[in-house]
Image 1 (tube, rainbow over the protein chains, first blue to last red):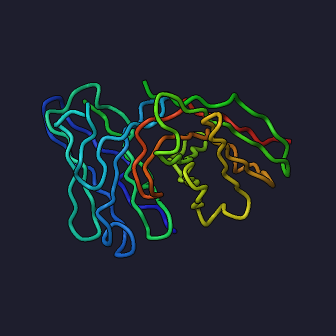
Image 2 (image 1 turned 90 degrees about the vertical axis):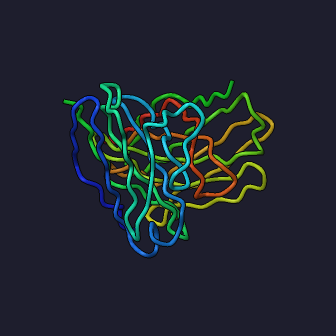
Image 3 (image 1 turned 90 degrees about the horizontal axis):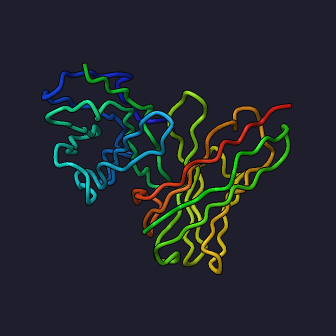
Length: 109
Length: 120
Protein backbone atom coordinates (compact mmCIF):
# COMPACT_ATOMS: atom_id res chain seq x y z
CA UNK A 1 0.00 0.00 0.00
CA UNK A 2 1.58 3.29 -1.08
CA UNK A 3 1.64 6.29 1.19
CA UNK A 4 -0.81 9.10 0.57
CA UNK A 5 0.68 12.14 -1.18
CA UNK A 6 1.05 15.39 0.73
CA UNK A 7 3.07 18.52 -0.12
CA UNK A 8 6.38 18.51 1.75
CA UNK A 9 5.84 22.02 3.07
CA UNK A 10 3.38 24.88 3.22
CA UNK A 11 3.66 28.28 4.83
CA UNK A 12 1.50 31.21 5.77
CA UNK A 13 1.47 34.38 7.81
CA UNK A 14 -0.40 34.78 11.08
CA UNK A 15 -4.09 35.33 10.48
CA UNK A 16 -4.05 33.80 7.01
CA UNK A 17 -5.62 30.50 5.94
CA UNK A 18 -3.76 27.55 4.49
CA UNK A 19 -4.84 24.24 3.00
CA UNK A 20 -2.91 20.98 3.02
CA UNK A 21 -3.88 18.39 0.44
CA UNK A 22 -3.74 14.62 0.78
CA UNK A 23 -4.09 12.63 -2.42
CA UNK A 24 -4.83 8.94 -2.44
CA UNK A 25 -6.67 6.61 -4.76
CA UNK A 26 -10.16 5.28 -5.36
CA UNK A 27 -9.19 2.38 -3.05
CA UNK A 28 -8.57 4.51 0.01
CA UNK A 29 -9.39 8.24 0.27
CA UNK A 30 -11.92 8.05 -2.55
CA UNK A 31 -13.80 5.08 -1.12
CA UNK A 32 -14.22 5.96 2.54
CA UNK A 33 -15.11 9.00 4.62
CA UNK A 34 -12.44 7.88 7.06
CA UNK A 35 -9.60 10.37 6.66
CA UNK A 36 -7.94 11.61 9.83
CA UNK A 37 -5.48 14.44 10.28
CA UNK A 38 -2.77 14.54 12.94
CA UNK A 39 -0.63 17.41 14.17
CA UNK A 40 2.84 16.65 15.51
CA UNK A 41 5.18 19.08 17.19
CA UNK A 42 8.90 18.19 17.32
CA UNK A 43 9.64 15.48 19.84
CA UNK A 44 5.97 15.03 20.72
CA UNK A 45 3.35 12.40 20.04
CA UNK A 46 0.80 13.09 17.31
CA UNK A 47 -2.52 14.72 18.15
CA UNK A 48 -5.71 14.08 16.22
CA UNK A 49 -7.19 17.26 14.77
CA UNK A 50 -9.81 15.85 12.37
CA UNK A 51 -11.37 12.39 12.12
CA UNK A 52 -13.87 10.79 9.75
CA UNK A 53 -13.12 13.44 7.19
CA UNK A 54 -14.56 16.52 8.84
CA UNK A 55 -15.20 15.89 12.53
CA UNK A 56 -13.29 17.75 15.24
CA UNK A 57 -12.52 16.10 18.57
CA UNK A 58 -13.52 17.95 21.69
CA UNK A 59 -10.97 20.64 22.48
CA UNK A 60 -9.70 21.15 18.94
CA UNK A 61 -10.12 24.68 17.66
CA UNK A 62 -12.80 25.30 15.04
CA UNK A 63 -10.06 26.97 12.98
CA UNK A 64 -9.29 23.43 11.79
CA UNK A 65 -11.58 21.87 9.20
CA UNK A 66 -11.50 18.89 6.87
CA UNK A 67 -13.03 18.15 3.49
CA UNK A 68 -12.77 15.77 0.57
CA UNK A 69 -13.24 15.84 -3.18
CA UNK A 70 -12.76 12.63 -5.09
CA UNK A 71 -9.49 11.01 -4.12
CA UNK A 72 -8.13 14.12 -2.39
CA UNK A 73 -8.74 15.13 1.20
CA UNK A 74 -7.84 18.56 2.54
CA UNK A 75 -7.10 20.15 5.89
CA UNK A 76 -7.74 23.88 6.17
CA UNK A 77 -6.42 25.98 9.01
CA UNK A 78 -7.88 29.47 9.23
CA UNK A 79 -6.62 32.37 11.31
CA UNK A 80 -3.12 30.90 11.37
CA UNK A 81 -1.33 31.17 14.72
CA UNK A 82 2.31 30.64 15.68
CA UNK A 83 1.39 27.52 17.67
CA UNK A 84 0.06 25.88 14.49
CA UNK A 85 3.61 25.48 13.22
CA UNK A 86 4.08 21.71 13.18
CA UNK A 87 4.07 18.63 10.96
CA UNK A 88 0.68 17.44 9.72
CA UNK A 89 -0.16 13.93 8.59
CA UNK A 90 -3.24 12.62 6.86
CA UNK A 91 -4.34 9.04 7.30
CA UNK A 92 -6.91 6.91 5.49
CA UNK A 93 -8.53 3.51 5.73
CA UNK A 94 -7.64 1.32 2.74
CA UNK A 95 -10.18 -1.45 3.14
CA UNK A 96 -7.60 -3.78 4.62
CA UNK A 97 -5.60 -1.46 6.86
CA UNK A 98 -4.54 2.14 7.31
CA UNK A 99 -2.04 4.29 5.42
CA UNK A 100 -0.47 7.63 6.34
CA UNK A 101 0.61 10.47 4.12
CA UNK A 102 4.25 11.48 4.00
CA UNK A 103 3.62 14.55 6.15
CA UNK A 104 3.60 18.31 5.56
CA UNK A 105 5.70 20.81 7.47
CA UNK A 106 3.70 23.95 8.18
CA UNK A 107 5.74 27.08 8.75
CA UNK A 108 4.12 30.19 10.20
CA UNK A 109 6.07 33.13 8.83
CA UNK B 1 -8.02 11.02 33.23
CA UNK B 2 -7.02 8.86 30.31
CA UNK B 3 -3.33 7.94 30.25
CA UNK B 4 -1.26 5.67 28.06
CA UNK B 5 2.24 4.89 29.32
CA UNK B 6 4.80 2.92 27.35
CA UNK B 7 7.86 0.96 28.37
CA UNK B 8 11.36 2.35 28.06
CA UNK B 9 13.87 2.49 25.23
CA UNK B 10 15.34 -0.71 23.83
CA UNK B 11 18.54 -1.53 21.97
CA UNK B 12 18.55 -4.80 20.05
CA UNK B 13 20.81 -6.62 17.65
CA UNK B 14 19.70 -7.51 14.13
CA UNK B 15 17.68 -10.73 14.11
CA UNK B 16 16.51 -10.32 17.71
CA UNK B 17 12.98 -9.57 18.93
CA UNK B 18 11.60 -6.68 20.96
CA UNK B 19 8.43 -6.44 23.03
CA UNK B 20 7.02 -3.00 23.84
CA UNK B 21 4.31 -2.55 26.46
CA UNK B 22 1.57 0.05 26.64
CA UNK B 23 -0.36 0.46 29.91
CA UNK B 24 -3.70 2.22 29.75
CA UNK B 25 -5.63 3.82 32.58
CA UNK B 26 -8.58 6.12 33.15
CA UNK B 27 -11.02 4.28 30.90
CA UNK B 28 -12.51 0.84 30.32
CA UNK B 29 -9.73 -0.94 28.46
CA UNK B 30 -11.97 -3.36 26.59
CA UNK B 31 -14.19 -0.60 25.16
CA UNK B 32 -11.49 0.76 22.87
CA UNK B 33 -8.87 -0.52 20.45
CA UNK B 34 -5.12 0.05 20.61
CA UNK B 35 -3.26 1.25 17.53
CA UNK B 36 0.51 1.03 17.03
CA UNK B 37 2.34 3.55 14.85
CA UNK B 38 6.08 3.94 14.29
CA UNK B 39 8.28 6.80 13.16
CA UNK B 40 11.84 6.28 11.94
CA UNK B 41 14.30 9.08 12.78
CA UNK B 42 13.47 12.18 10.74
CA UNK B 43 10.73 10.33 8.87
CA UNK B 44 6.94 10.27 8.78
CA UNK B 45 4.38 8.17 10.59
CA UNK B 46 3.82 4.54 9.61
CA UNK B 47 0.82 2.49 10.74
CA UNK B 48 1.90 -0.82 12.26
CA UNK B 49 -1.41 -2.33 13.29
CA UNK B 50 -4.39 -2.45 15.63
CA UNK B 51 -5.79 -4.78 18.27
CA UNK B 52 -9.10 -5.05 20.02
CA UNK B 53 -8.67 -5.79 23.74
CA UNK B 54 -12.32 -6.87 23.76
CA UNK B 55 -11.92 -9.92 21.55
CA UNK B 56 -8.25 -10.02 20.55
CA UNK B 57 -8.93 -9.26 16.88
CA UNK B 58 -5.92 -7.81 15.11
CA UNK B 59 -5.15 -6.04 11.86
CA UNK B 60 -1.50 -5.70 10.84
CA UNK B 61 0.20 -3.66 8.14
CA UNK B 62 0.89 -5.90 5.18
CA UNK B 63 4.56 -4.90 5.11
CA UNK B 64 5.20 -6.17 8.62
CA UNK B 65 2.50 -8.75 9.29
CA UNK B 66 4.81 -11.76 9.19
CA UNK B 67 7.04 -10.34 11.95
CA UNK B 68 4.65 -8.55 14.35
CA UNK B 69 2.38 -9.88 17.09
CA UNK B 70 0.04 -7.71 19.13
CA UNK B 71 -1.53 -8.94 22.35
CA UNK B 72 -3.33 -7.55 25.37
CA UNK B 73 -3.65 -8.43 29.05
CA UNK B 74 -7.05 -7.21 30.17
CA UNK B 75 -6.25 -7.94 33.83
CA UNK B 76 -3.63 -5.19 33.79
CA UNK B 77 -5.02 -3.04 30.93
CA UNK B 78 -1.78 -3.48 29.07
CA UNK B 79 -1.16 -3.95 25.36
CA UNK B 80 1.98 -5.43 23.87
CA UNK B 81 3.62 -5.26 20.48
CA UNK B 82 6.32 -7.80 19.70
CA UNK B 83 8.43 -7.40 16.57
CA UNK B 84 10.76 -10.19 15.51
CA UNK B 85 13.64 -10.67 13.06
CA UNK B 86 14.67 -7.08 13.68
CA UNK B 87 16.48 -5.16 10.96
CA UNK B 88 18.19 -1.78 10.99
CA UNK B 89 15.22 -0.18 9.25
CA UNK B 90 13.02 -1.15 12.21
CA UNK B 91 14.85 1.54 14.21
CA UNK B 92 12.10 3.96 15.15
CA UNK B 93 9.98 5.46 17.88
CA UNK B 94 7.02 3.15 18.42
CA UNK B 95 3.80 4.76 19.65
CA UNK B 96 0.69 3.11 21.00
CA UNK B 97 -2.58 4.99 21.15
CA UNK B 98 -6.16 4.47 22.21
CA UNK B 99 -8.41 4.19 19.20
CA UNK B 100 -11.87 2.96 18.39
CA UNK B 101 -13.52 -0.38 17.92
CA UNK B 102 -12.24 -0.73 14.36
CA UNK B 103 -8.79 -0.49 12.78
CA UNK B 104 -9.83 2.56 10.77
CA UNK B 105 -10.82 4.60 13.83
CA UNK B 106 -8.74 7.61 14.79
CA UNK B 107 -6.46 7.58 17.84
CA UNK B 108 -7.15 10.13 20.55
CA UNK B 109 -4.78 9.41 23.45
CA UNK B 110 -1.17 8.55 22.69
CA UNK B 111 1.69 7.13 24.67
CA UNK B 112 4.99 8.95 24.99
CA UNK B 113 6.70 6.68 22.48
CA UNK B 114 9.34 3.99 22.85
CA UNK B 115 12.63 4.29 20.98
CA UNK B 116 13.73 0.96 19.54
CA UNK B 117 17.26 0.95 18.14
CA UNK B 118 18.49 -1.98 16.06
CA UNK B 119 22.25 -2.03 15.80
CA UNK B 120 25.03 -4.56 15.74
